[in-house]
Length: 205
Image (tube, rainbow, N blue to C red; front, top):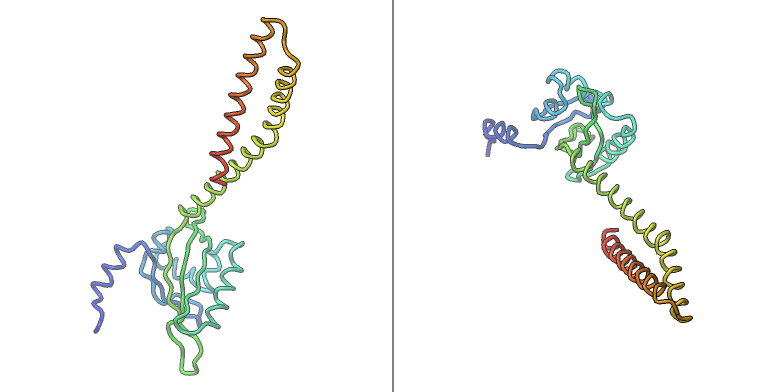
């Protein structure tokens, strides 16, 4: 069945995913659904020019090895095998966004050599940011748990030991007994708080 071009255009318009076809032989973009250049803030012509050499000028320097590894996998992959990649791309305003893409072989030439790949890409910047925030929260919980277990728990245990020792030896003064009871109640409350912190922190680490 011949595809309805108007339907496909409408589909691209409502999608949050970029669809592309890329010419591996000439290292250039053959087709774009139009979302990528809008998302990055470039004109259609600018984005097409940037597509040469696998978007080298747009890819973050630290992620260029990822691109080469992905291309190498595609070159040696059978038709239908999907190669995934997450990299940072430069926007027109100078900031980078995280982009997740899935690509696979679409067409080979008469010699059986790969010549065209198809790709879908989407902006995952918010997802990566949430991952980083979650990782930071986990590290904070680990720090709290460590301080609670090692730095706070130790002196509290020492005070509890001293209280037990004083109780064993006995207190004769009524005034000292009142002070002692207040101290005992305070340290018991503090000890309970420490246990509660550990119970809250440990399941989240």
